[in-house]
Length: 458
Image 1 (cartoon, helix red, strand yellow):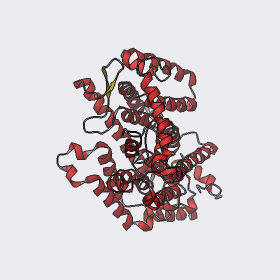
Image 2 (cartoon, helix red, strand yellow):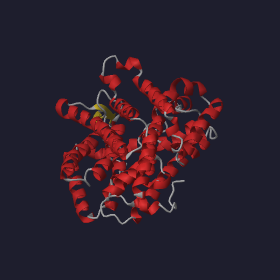
Image 3 (cartoon, helix red, strand yellow):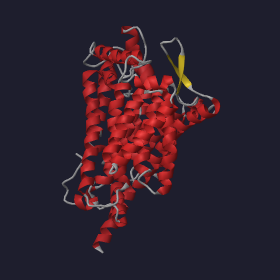
Image 4 (tube, helix red, strand yellow):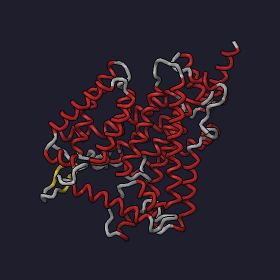
């Protein structure tokens, strides 16, 4: 009876701290609008500035419910994020292009970083975590399958690359309603693969069937992008999948068949494009070498103003003024140095390190349990660890300070850690609800191991 009373009290406390259902549903709408670009698809919708309006509404909703959020803000991953925001504000008068920061670059940065706060604060129950992950993956699949469908039915490509023979080769980019180039489309493809593998392939046969249908389509779309950076990112993902697999011999055989099948459908230009990663003498080798030299120049440019940088989002402007070209940065780490200097670089990397440490702690706690069945939480943790290393590698070839992906990743990590690992007696209500739900189902007894209060994310 005492146990039931304690559980009921914890559940009542949970209902007091979970944000409203309307807030969560509106956040899902914001996610759909952000990734599927309703402003382009619906005539006249863009005149309403829907993304910024949605951000303002969500901020207002969270402010009204601020008493439910105080405990969540104590999570250690938030600390470097708050430090980064404060640093950007304080250093603004000292950067080289403060006017550009205010006029042009705050908008995309705000739209990106809010994903960390919204995901961490609003995704506060297991069911909401499942729904959010599902909506996010659905959006990424639409972004990949739409241009692939247009390519197969209408010959759509969306982009091209210049060849040394003075010709152009087609490359698949995002759909007309999207804004992503071939490299970004490749990034989306490789991002969604770990979610499908760990959350679908580990499920029932129907989910496995969906996985087997989607994977060939995604890999074929990746071939059509001719994105070498995405191909390297796929190798990182493949390594983690192989490392986690209990059937390594079978998986190696499947990998060989996939490689053979992929080369059989590639055009000669596509083959040479991917071979240029390791062979500088084939077509595309010169551009690969040029990309490396460009990265070196970007690091050198960042060190010309090393303390506070040139200003948030000013990489293109800085390169145009000092290098004579305005091509966007292709390296997150160089971009950090250029825009926010060494101090900002250290703060941002601290944010990434703290996030990764939390995921590793969670992985160790799952490893200590004696459960036979792997929970959704554990599989999602595997997804995020895989994505961390993929993002870390791909960021060598991709910018990110004002892009959503690291912030959404951080928000998901906070939400997952809070739900899966907080001890029952001192959890937020959302966390208590999740722990009780898993204990009653017999699939998650990790809470039993946390009663002594020894395992915290702090």
